[in-house]
Image (cartoon, rainbow, N blue to C red; front, side, top):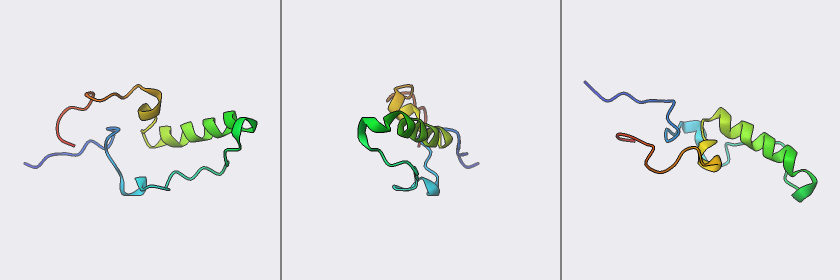
Length: 67
C-alpha cells in the first residue's frame, strides 16, 4: 500500500499555494491601515492552514513522518 497524504497538515503545499497566490486586496500603507491589512492577511493564511507559521503555534519538530 502507498502512503496517504494528509491535506490538513500545515506543511502540505497545494499547487495553488504558489508564491503570489495569497492575494490581499488591501495594500499595506504603514500604521495608517495596518490593523485592516493584518486581519486580511491572517484570514488568508488561516484559510490555507498556514497561520501557525507566523503566530508561533506551529514549530519545528511538530511534524511527524515524511513530508
